[in-house]
Length: 66
View 1 (spheres, rainbow, N blue to C red):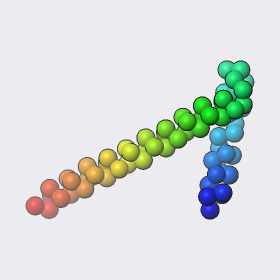
View 2 (view 1 turned 30 degrees about the vertical axis):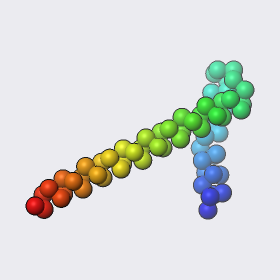
View 3 (view 1 turned 135 degrees about the vertical axis):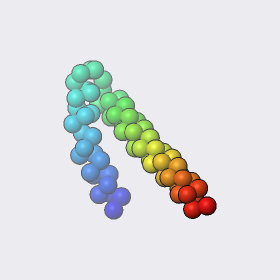
View 4 (view 1 turned 45 degrees about the vertical axis):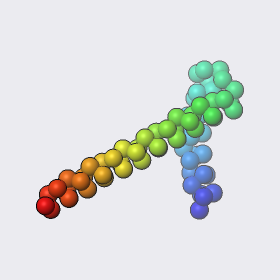
């Protein structure tokens, strides 16, 4: 399963890496690291936002039950 997830992520990120490489004249390795850092930051941000909204909704639900 982890290999399947990694394969899907690589398929989605590959065009972005190529575009960054062409636009900025960075090496492929540097472009890949940059794009992966941005993608992981977005994923972590979405997870943090989801956890915060779940906690907020749970506290509102508990206040409503009182």
